[in-house]
Length: 221
Image 1: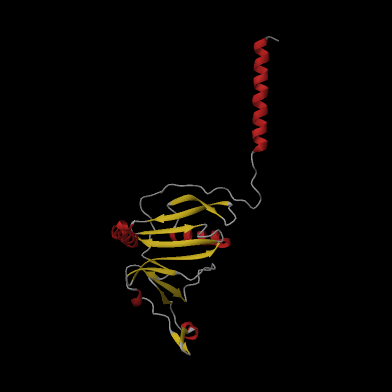
Image 2: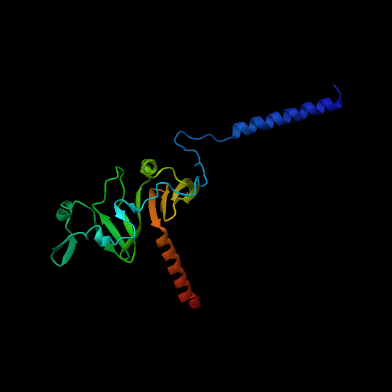
């Protein structure tokens, strides 16, 4: 065997060994692991099922014209929600928390979730969000897809636990001309998921308010 032939055999042997080691070193998914989310670009310029309301609340129309403020009762000198009277209502009601409105008697979605928080622009609802336990995230995603179609955008998200571990999830978006719906597999913690919807009016208003605040307070820096 000549020297060149021997060199070819040695190189081939080294390449085969490296490939074998690479294959054996490839990590395997654990049985309870899930593959990384598939990232997609907007499939179409328009969201075909873009809503003008969410969970029965119409955007751009005064909330007081849609649902009542929740009834209360006084016990001593304190005021509490009158849950007995609330059960007699045939619709949701709301309580006030600063600039937000908290929906009570909200519709049963078939998935355990927290009370929805209504985002207001003055006395008009322009968005909403609520959290749910993370173990229900797939059920909620299926529900959203059934109602609103496939998301127009899916992005990967990374989240850090209190222990410092990195958890990879996905953020699903339905982007329309006037409304954006977002479902985050992981919300503000890795134990919950988050559904949020807002109108372009609310987004524009928030940006304008942020700019006004920046102009008002920039000289204090």
